Length: 252
Image (tube, rainbow, N blue to C red):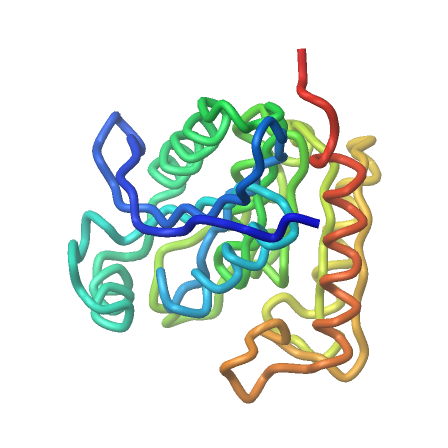
């Protein structure tokens, strides 16, 4: 199999047509068509670990793009400084997030090698934002990796302004995969159970998996929270899900 890829920083049009930074990783192959994935970074920001995830998707023959959601707050800053600036500003507004992800979706679909199918995937705050995007944009699949505050209110003193969005479930435009840790508190298992109930009542196509001996950020290989078995099984679920919903023939 051809496992070649190209990767690097580009500029795309985000919310309101504003130019934002993004990281693009795409497989190479003459005449081949690929599904696309918008990788929504976690609260720590547009960092090296997130870019590695984008390259992992490209290795598996998906076009992956990660928009830098903190471009406006701290252009050119380190991921830590940009994340601090974004938190000080109250976080990424939901309306702007939708516009930035929509710009990334449009960019992928404009590429000659795109099959027209695009998914979102997000981790931590990005998990919530992946669901938000899927309720606001016409996409083909979405993955929520332990996204908090979809159902429950954040605790007092939480550093960003965020609100529950489970009421958007009737607007979900595509199948949803949820991957959660049994030892997580944000979201706790009872919250994901409530989330599943809401989606079921709305008649939506979804599948949720909760992994034992795993808490928040169990995919994060550079953090103490990393759990090998949960991450391995989680990636297997992602490849199967995207294989069914994204890696298909070009859409009409």
